[in-house]
Length: 89
Image 1 (spheres, rainbow, N blue to C red):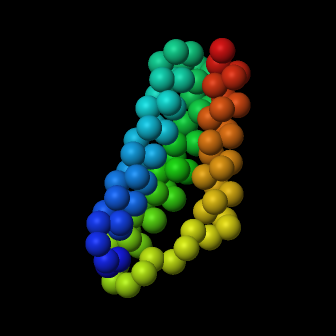
Image 2 (cartoon, one colour):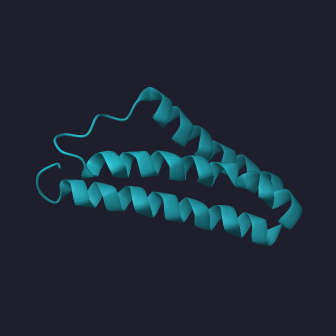
């Protein structure tokens, strides 16, 4: 496990990111039910990446850096939610 409280803060930051992403996705579904469902793949992708990152933070030693694919997935999920939000409005 990473030393100090930094790993714990990082793990909690990933948890907050996933939860806030789900809040935005579910609000989009609540506001415009049939069209808002297109926003849900975004929170799903962020949840998967956040789960993997949090699991690595619990392991022994230094966690690996975020891969390029994970970064692209998170950025794409955020863009997907933004585009879906624009379509809903």
